[in-house]
Image (cartoon, rainbow, N blue to C red; front, side, top):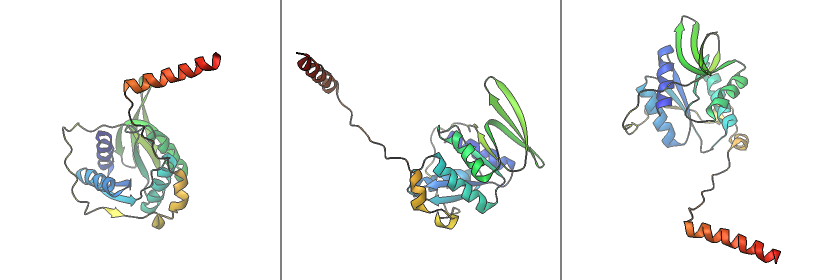
Length: 203
């Protein structure tokens, strides 16, 4: 949540901003609450699909076109797949991309970004549409409050964005298989059985 809050705060400092969230109802409520606290509007795309980075990029790009958004910030630090999303969204929108930004500030129509490259720090000037991956953490909170009802959340379904859920489902990740934990005795027994079978086959 610290990375999400940091990205929202950075967007709000650049001017009027809208957060884009996609997922189930509980996530949309939480995202809308965090956006409201950062004084950002929020658009939610309801879906039960658990998509890979290309699937999410298609949703973000479709919403960006709907909004006519010029600058898109992506929190690329909270999850490993966030960094590839930056490139995928930029490619879908045919705009410039920038990753690893740790500071952003605007000077009229010119956007300045500081990015970490190894042990050095580069400053880049951007003019025009761009997708920027940010690594900005907000201050830590001991406990996040329960999300308030998302009264200002604007919902857009996939069909309204020109996206077919059946086609998008091809980008869905396979469900995670949860293996029940085994105790030490079961692990030892499995190893011994394998060893005994091998010995029998060699006899």
